[in-house]
Image: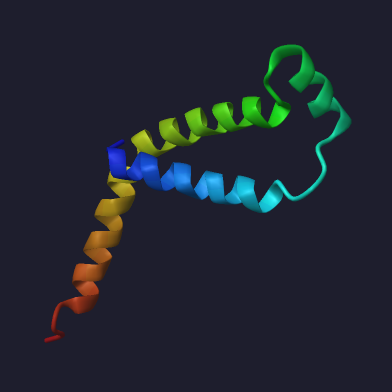
Length: 79
């Protein structure tokens, strides 16, 4: 993935985190946070980012190609 894709994905995840952070932390998050410095949310975020990165590496080029072809077909004058 290029740097722009990574940055956009991280911004989106950070916005989601900010939107959801208004709620009180769960008791399990507090316990993990005190013992290891990581919350469950931190661990899940790391795993999800890894999974999204892997999925994007595998599927993004073909998705972009399909969408570009569709847009070109839409813009092409009809005969």
